[in-house]
Image (cartoon, rainbow, N blue to C red; front, side, top):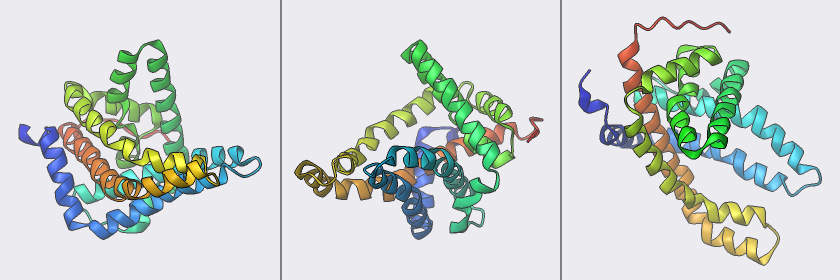
Length: 232
């Protein structure tokens, strides 16, 4: 494999190319994915809404994330893809759910220990969901595979992470508005934040997720012969 595909520049440029070829599919997928956050924000204001939001986050958002990443992985590989692919995570719910929960626990432990170990573990295990969706790996095997393919490339992944973190605050004003819906403050933030929120979720999020999918694809292609088999 050429080393020029193992760069942040290539990951972003390829993601941009994929978006240009599949704008309707990627935007439609982003609408479905983003809708869970909007719905959760609205439900949180209902009596006992926090419990419903918790259920949504645990049992809908996690598999939907797996399906969203799987959809974009198919697109960056040039494989046939359809909007229904975004629900693929529900067909392997247990594997995706356990991988996500295990990864989150490890990352939280890293952040509690100190910021630097936390960031390193984010970069080391951050591709686990891609791995379990792509290769049908059990949770611990997905973590192992993510650790293997990211070895030696954490600095580049860190740069991609920084780019993602810099652009992510675009969605904050609207999110603040949802948290304060019904008040003048909430209305102000929703009006001010609706455009950057739409741009962030309908354009920036698909583009960056496609960049992460491209990163996973190029890094994992170096280990096609690695014998890691699913156990779930």
